[in-house]
Every structure is written in structure tokens, then in C-alpha cells.
Length: 303
Ligand SMILES: [Zn+2]
Image 1 (cartoon, rainbow, N blue to C red):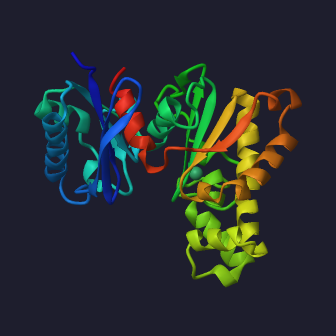
Image 2 (cartoon, protein in one colour; image 1 turned 120 degrees about the vertical axis):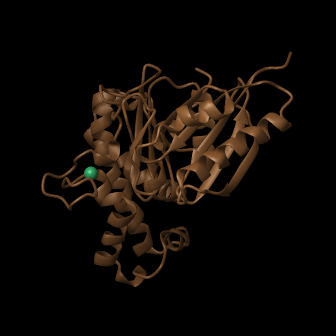
């Protein structure tokens, strides 16, 4: 008999990505299609049902379970989404239970930052590591801490919200309502604010293009990524001092700038952490890109 497979489905505001993984974390059968999450809940459930049906049809091996990744705040059991700014139809529904009832498989769910961290640990940049911190730089700043092989959840399941790590008592107002959170500086809106204030020539161009200018050697464009790296470095240094990880993995759109922000990030961490921690610490970019969520969600369905 061949080995069991699990399905991972990453539900985004505009796209749904899915795939199956085997016991080694190998991903296959990728799907990337428009998401029905902005329509009503029933349509979304139907879409997810179709995806599960598709994998059952094409797989020779048994499907053992489904893992869902979604952006939003979940209850401590991770069965109901309480808040989801980009996926309003999900809020208040017991998505894993409803899907489980339709497809007759066990269904688990977790937030996008946690599944990304697990995915990178299964078959990406943190493969084999038991002590690492994962960060995603996108519209917001997502994060997760894995300590001694365990994802830190805290009592309410809200652990690892690194984007809301305060780095300045009086800093700018964050989307969460507090001041001076990391996300208020290096979330998309925060970076935009920095650009508009310091490099208005980039006011009307996207971050991707600023990145291209930076790669081409433009000093002002490079400064944007130095700002991101140094600011992130302050928060990472704090986390290193608390968790003493061996690895910090940074993914998301901004991470495409690679060494342009990693170098200032490392410099900042080096200045602010105990020297003894630095010998075992590595900071690098994520490897799985947009598929980390699918792999992580599918891996969570195996446990
Ligand atoms: Zn915040």
C-alpha cells in the first residue's frame, strides 16, 4: 500500500492555493485559483469541497486529512475565525467542522504565519531546526516562534504576534490600535510612510520597483531596505535575547530584497544581543515562497 497523503489549502483574500504532501513533505498537484472568500460562506465551502474531491480523484494514495491556512484571529481551539479583515465571509463560522462534515475527513486550521513557519520547518529554510523564528513581511508583519520543536501558542492561541511587538513607546499608530508596533514601521503602510517622508521620488512606484532600483545600485532605494532591516533587527534582537533560536527565517514580498535588508538586519542584531548567542544564530530568507502555507497546513493535518 502506498503512503497516505494530506491536503493543504491556503485561503487568501483573492486566491486559494492548494496541494498534497507525502510523509516527507514533498508537495504535488498544486492548484492556484481565484478565491470565493469574498462571496458567501456556502460558496467557499463548495469550492473547498471541490478541491478535496479533485485530490481524491487524482491520487492513488489515501487522503488522510485536510489542513487549512487562513489570515485572521482564531479562537483558542482554532475552529472559528473571530476576525479576518480580508475574508469577511469566514468570520463566525466553524470552517474546519463544516468542511469535515461535507468531506468525511478530519480538518484542522491555523493562521497563515503559523503554517508558513511549519512549512519552512518541514521542507524549507528551517528544515531540521527545532529552535527558530519565522517572519513574513507583507501587508502586515506575521510571525511565529518554534522553541524546542513546539510552536509557541500561549494560553489564548495568540502567541507569536511578532508584528505587534512594540519597539517604540511613542511610535506611530498601528492597525491593532496600539502605538509603536513593529508592523506600524515595516508593514506595507509603514514602509510607504518612510518612503514618502524620506524619498518622495518613489512616492508613486511600488515596492517591487523600489527593490529593482536598489538591486541596480540606487542609494535612496537601498536606504529603504536598510531602514527595513535595521528596524526589524531591533525586534529580532529582542526575540533572540528571549528565545535564543538557532535560526531566523524571513519571508514575504520584502524578503525578495535579500542581502540588501539582511545585512543591516544582522548588524542590528549583532549590536543588541549577547555575543554568546551569535555563534549559533543564522538569519536567512525563506525558501518556499507562496507555497509555505500549503505545505505547513498539509503537515499540520498529519499530526
Ligand atoms: Zn500593532
